[in-house]
Image (tube, rainbow, N blue to C red; front, side, top):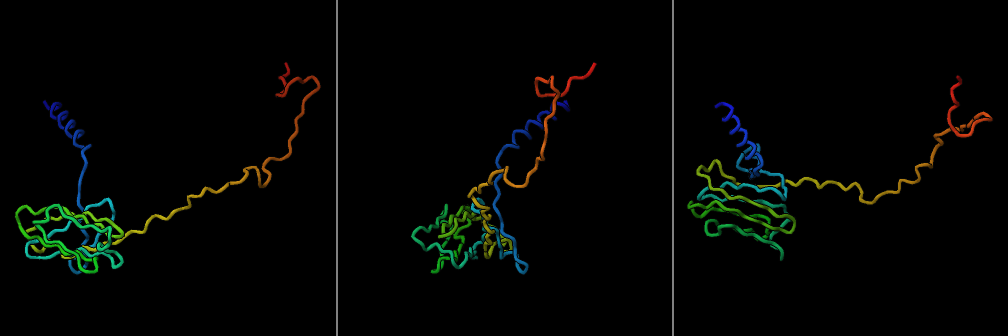
Length: 182
């Protein structure tokens, strides 16, 4: 009986271990107020904005980044449940829930530099909400040089083999060690 239960549990763990795991990234709160958050930007990450009815959240982009370009885009999954809009400079986005009737949705912001994927979640306690979300941007990996360098001739350089000689006796017909004397 115990073996069957253990086998069933093992099978269940093996089946579920291959399932994908999804997690939104919540920014790290500042030292003064955890509701003012900073997240490390990655194009492969979804960032969570926790909002509360009657309050506005803000996504703050760098000054040199804007959604007011011809290629800019800002669209949400449920536009009727949220009031979302940029400032005139295009680097600030105000987000405010309009209704508490199933408003959880997503928001995509495409700027002249990055694409941001946001998950908008309604929270009941204002102390849990995101007042501001800012991003830091890691340095891109430095290229080590895609150009292959010619390593040159490996035989050039200092002599590694010294002079050598071959000696044999007059009866020798091949190169090899002397036969053992019997």
